[in-house]
Length: 289
Figure 1 (cartoon, rainbow, N blue to C red):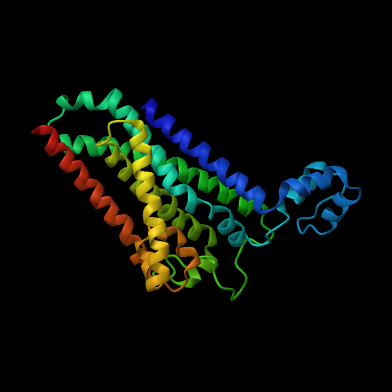
Figure 2: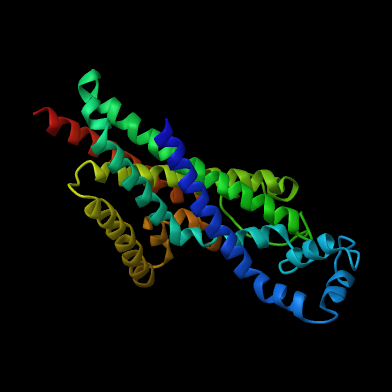
């Protein structure tokens, strides 16, 4: 249990710090804060343009107005902040696999003789580890979403404006996005930040079963992930952007590829999950021989 909690905390802290740094960089908070403390009249101009009713001279309100400047629309702000996860999904998945490898070789594999079904036991251990990582990432996403929503000038989408993400909008009505914007982004987060993380962490853990060292446990899945991503870039340029469905992070890139099938974006992660389960079965059969 302590191992799962530690895994959750590591995943949460790492990804929230990444989202927070990207949020600050995207909104240029550091240079604006420097101007706030060094430039005469800057705080007054912030308060004059603040739609929340900032009172000049009230430091907490001035700082909040400073934080809220930048993107004016919630969905714009959030989609820009979380885009960095396309880079970090393979990394956080491999970290989860490495943590499983450590726990597996120290404790878990020596308990196998206590259980009747080796396949179910191994998969349950891998699943629990992947769930801890995915929950940590998902909670970090929810906290980031709350930050973007709190500081956004406009909470709801502009009437008639194109959505900042098309994912799932071929399966659910556009009115759901327009009228329940927070619920839409929570639903998107379940797929992008919980399910995708869980599946790829499971895959990294399945690879870890076959590895003899921590170095291999880290480098092998990273090579597979980024190798497939770079190969898919070539495939898209050569055969068209239909090949994006074969990209490991294609489900995340769905936000920038309009008019694509959400179900097809789910196909690659689901196939990866099936491959992981097959790897567990093969490993168990090999160990029992």
